Image (cartoon, rainbow, N blue to C red; front, side, top):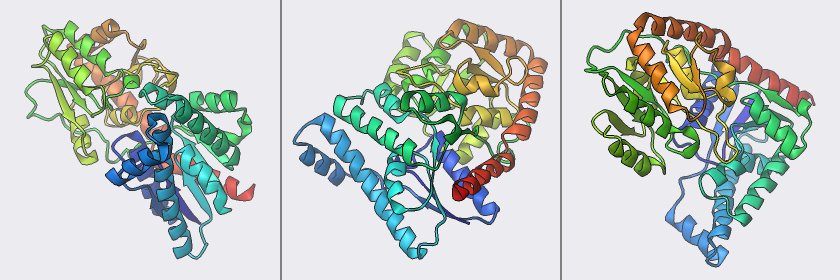
Length: 377
């Protein structure tokens, strides 16, 4: 079998990048020929061209810039198909934009949906009328054209089925996975002066990083720090919040972190915080960052929402709190610091659960089964 894995949204830092890299690695390990394609980084020339085509309209310029990116990756797909002499069996896309365009290649398309693109545009303040209409049209076309759709949690499936009138039988739920060999329990790092909780999150509204910062205000009497690994449009606001709460000495903003460094950060942390909140209809899926923390044997403190609630059994494989409830999060963090054995037990059970249910070996078998089903239909 020969598979083209691709996205038109780029391969920046984040869960989708980790997902795609893990998928390609896992397929190659199964001796499945795999090509990877993604667009070039946005250039100044692309922006100029988009604005020129849009005649000065920011709304229309967003559409034109997106079309330029899709066209860029589509041309790369054409070159790969030509180079492989039309022997590709299947295209596995990870966004609706490429899926809608790839349907024209006469090759079966499998689409993995990580989140509703149109809703995320609204969350990021880009939901202008023309652009939003364009994204929804691309979503509809992609869902209709794909042979099989993979949703990373039941919430994503519900959106596809309900909002876009897609048959439930066409959508498979396959939860995200993690490399359990890379993210494995390690001895506590003795070089860390004070225990720290890690928030490995992009700084966007839905990730609720402000909730973790507010929770830390309730731990003023304890020797602990909050480390935030990620970047995004919310950073200035979050830094101001930390300053307002007199937490600048205890909250560290680490910026974007490479995968190899993230492994070290997670392994040395006391616990992992995933404080997601529903924003503009965007609800956290099966967070790869949460799975990485669980795989490393760390207690994960997560919002009781979306895919997080599907992978964490409260007080057994992790600790849940209601979205936005920084007071309860603060209580849980204090309790964990005061009861190290209790925290360690939760981490151990989380590790066992992830190895059994979310390892790459378990995951890739389900993906390959989807491929076979798509080729048979």
